[in-house]
Structure formats: C-alpha cells, structure tokens
View: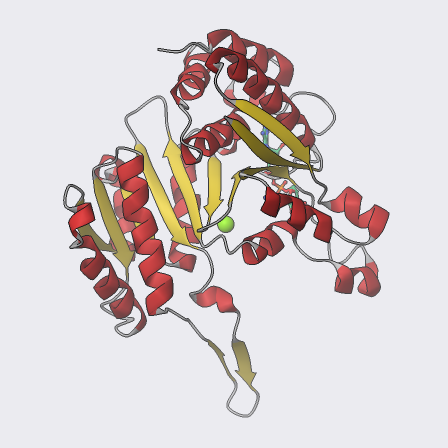
Length: 342
Ligand code: NAI
Ligand code: MG
C-alpha cells in the first residue's frame, strides 16, 4: 500500500531530526515490504517567512490536505520585538494555522518513561475552552473577563476520540479530568457528555472514571501508574501535559499528535532549539516516536520502531540531552540497526 506523507521540516533542529527520522522510516519500509511511503515536502517557518513574508503558504495547506498524514519538525517563531510592526501583522503561526485549517481538534500527548512503568496519554481538546480568546477589560469597573466555551458537539467528539483511541491502542481505561464542582455549567456539560458516551455499547470493555483537575495534578506526581488515557478540556490539558512531560524522559522523548476527523499531524513537543541547531547533536527520538504514532494512525505496525528507540535509550545510545555521547546520525544508525519485526 502507498502512503503519502506531507513533510514539513521547519527550522533549526526541526530539519535535522526530521531528515534522520525519514532515513529511519525508509529503512523500516524495506523491512515491512508491503508498504511504500512517498514523502512530499512542504514549507513553513521562519526561513519561509523571511523569504516570502508567509510563514505558512497556502500551498503547504493544500499539500497537507492531499496527504494521508503530516510529519512536522519544529519552527522558530519570530520575536515580536525584533521584526517590526509590518512583519508582525503578517505573521501567522504555522502550527495554529494548520490546527485550524485542518480542524485538528484532539491533541494527543503520551508520557513515556522507560525507567519505570509510567505510560499514559493525555487527550486534550484543542479548539475551544479558554482558547477562544474572548477576553475583555471593563475600564469603568476595572475588571477583566475571559470566556470559556464548552460545546456539546466539541465535548462529544473529543470524548469519542479518547475512547476510540483507547480501543485502537489497546488501552483499558479513560479518565475524564474536570473541575465541575466549581465550573458547574461548562465542566458540568463536559462531564455529563463523558458519562453519556462512556455508556455506549462500543466502549463496554473500557473502564471509565473521572477526577478533579487539582487532584489529578497531585496524582500525576504521586501515583502516575493509575492513569491510562485522560481526556480533558483545552487549558487543563495544556497544563497537565507539561506537568506530565517532566515525569517522562524530557523533551528529547516527547512526541505529540494533532488529530481531526480527516487529517492528522505529528510533531515533537520540542521547538527548533536554536542553541544547538546546525551542530548535528539534536535528539531525534521524539520525532521517531511521532513517526511511530503516525504509523499507529495509519494502521501500520509501529512496535519495531518503539522497541528500537527504547532499546537505544536503555543501552545508553543517546544524545547528550539524555546523558549519552552520540550525535543525531549515530543515534539514528543504532535505531535502524535495532529495527526488526517480531
Ligand atoms: P526548544 O524546545 O526549542 O528548546 C528548549 C531546550 O531544550 C534548548 O536548550 C534545546 O537545546 C533543548 N532541546 C529541545 N529539543 C531538543 C532535542 N531534540 N535534542 C536535544 N536538545 C533539545 O524551546 P525554546 O528554546 O523555548 O524555543 C526555541 C524556538 O522554538 C522558539 O522560536 C520557539 O517559538 C520555537 N518552538 C516551536 C515549537 C513548534 O514548532 N511546535 C514548539 C516549541 C517552541
Ligand atoms: Mg504548552
């Protein structure tokens, strides 16, 4: 079978880690035999912005829409204080634009820690909550208000996504994270929707429960093994997933996915790391784990990639950020060497 992958390398180490990930994927393609990956490159990021005054050209969005999945490296965002007013007005964040244009409403962030049995996934709603950015300041009375939107449709689709994700990834439990004791209307709706969908016959083999977000923040530190899949609203998901990433192997091992009904984009959590860009020492593992998530999405066996990354990690064949002494290319060589079908 033939798969078209839209490849957006971006800036800085984004280019380096994506290049090595594609080299690994080509090696894996040979092992798999029956699948063929076609890489279609598309541009986005700061270099593109300085060249053409457009950080995310329409062509890139069109290319993304024609592909089966998108692999995204990282981009450098311009500092508003450094580029002047005219350019600031023209700048659009590539990742936010893609999320919006492709309606990528679920943000999936696994926490992986090879030294323990922590292995859970946060599914964050990506389009509503406090991120609708409806805020205003009342001059006369000197207060500021932010609106928080929770819709029935938005809640239903993210909750269904979480349960379907649990089924297709062999996970056992979905926990709803909320603050419905205080936010009785908004999170009340979110929790009610969760409980309704959990009863669906399709999900009868998945355990479900719910926790308050503040307690969850504590449990993530104290007993992370109690979690499997968590589903939550936009801001809570943002905060909890950053908290969770501190438990895992750090930025060098943190993959993420942005998934909608028709498109899916996979990107490491880290940025373009200008401090180490161009030196060939960036850790490619996070992007390789993104690639594994992409294969899961495409229903292609990803186990060999996950196992190879884990083995390289456990054997200390890592880059400096994880305490090793290999460079990007050497880590990739090891991972390619470890790729085998079970
Ligand atoms: P960053 O994630 O690029 O770097 C933070 C620190 O972690 C740096 O010391 C860096 O060297 C290190 N690091 C990150 N990834 C690494 C890897 N794979 N291997 C080894 N070390 C790694 O975050 P920072 O410095 O805050 O942002 C740099 C640029 O990236 C900014 O322009 C920012 O806006 C952008 N950014 C882009 C993202 C994206 O494209 N989705 C996400 C986060 C930041
Ligand atoms: Mg964040």
